[in-house]
Image (cartoon, rainbow, N blue to C red; front, side):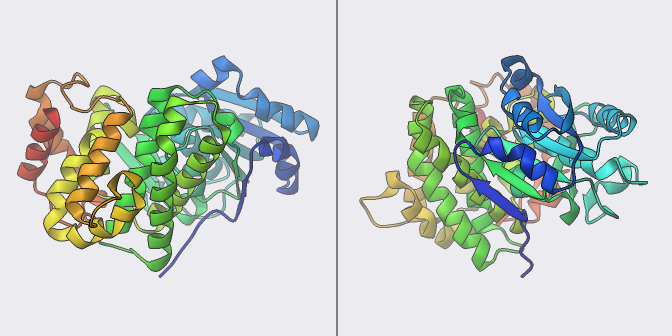
Length: 379
């Protein structure tokens, strides 16, 4: 077993005020704050910049991150960071912002090109100091060694390397208060998928990842509906962030599988949020996996409050999870998400390109299987 995670984690409401002093401890004097356009427009990022000002740290804001961040945007930010002599990077936002921050911190001091670092274990040398501050409870990117970048019109590539693990993760639930219900739901289910797929991963599953996955699923399923329907509930928001972080630690060490592999083409072609893409595919992939993961799904049954009240079984787990997703009121079928049925064969073909993920699935999936799963999900 080889278990890796972020070196230091601070999880408490209001801890964003420590950002400046923590950056200074890492030797940062001129930071790049990487965030997305929505956060920049709402001025939420000023919670971070105010903390940097208090510590007399110079900073520049990179506000141009978009969902499914394209390689060109990442490389422009790297060029900007080099020109400004940035010596530390802060990711502030959802998974896209944190992933971009990882790549910037890695490439700025490096002689490698971005093409050379795609894949597993291809990063050489050290990166700039890196702090991650999630503003959604979903990706767990603040504790993973993974970054996903859009490399073509519809394709995504992963960078997986220990150098991408941040120095510090700040988990501040105050930053998630008031997050819209549909975003809360989609990101929360994304985190639940991380936990479930880590628990059933065919490769690198271990006792630590299992413990983290079970506790993550328990916390997320207990608090998600409260966070969706009462966005100002700080306690629920904190438990969601904590659960998403635990799920991130689990899947960073026991990698995800077919749900993610089938979700990626949906995001690539239609720019559906990653969390919603996962939610649309989750029940169908779980049922497909039943012959190979029956006992593992039964073990997870007790982590879902909705599954209590009867004997634990894989079928009960899947039914409870499907009903739970319905209560979040996000779209439940590809048809509802406006996916053309005629595109399903194309999606199945694209999903097969995600062999990095498919090899982890409990049951082998063919292109024909993928097409059947998309058909079931279409409704």
